[in-house]
Image (cartoon, rainbow, N blue to C red):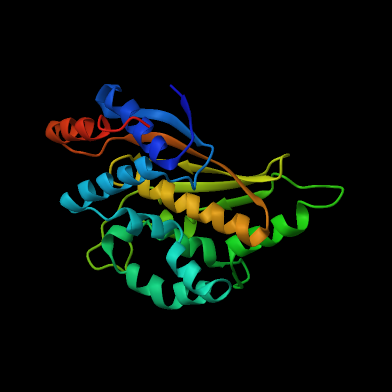
Length: 260
């Protein structure tokens, strides 16, 4: 059954989503929707949520929030180098290194945003194309509001049963968890983003994913010179990936510390 939660910040979205699954049968659910009105908002209380979740992830040996966020958008690299330089630095220096990590088999979303091979062999930068279209097609008499789509699934890559580039790889997954990004220009001039996940780990990935998506849409809004609007994340299958009841109890104790 679909559940829609309207919240203000990324930290509040994480707490709300986790609390929902803590009270769901089997700690899973389908079509959980988190609508975040101010995705870049971080006050002192929300910063404490980030700090606490990061500590939990490090203790359990998972990737940090920043690492997960950077798989979607390398915010620090962009701030240091700006466009277009950071595109090339990421593709030539950063991506080849992280691509070798097994845990990033499906999680190299930033590269998919910046680099695609067109049917005739031409290389295109999808997110840069989106920015150009927003800048040129959302102004004037005939404003375009809903044709800024990015499909994150590549059937020529993601339907393979194994990847010969990774030694001993036996992946039989159905492609990346982040399936689609839909940018919209609202009537009030704000840029909105809807992200669709086929499967979503709410402990290991959700908060880092929300951070990365917020940085991505902030980048697109800045480069297109438009206002930043809401972020909506649809998890068609959401689960608490603790793996044991002790982990569930610890997670419940953590979220109960906060009243956002």
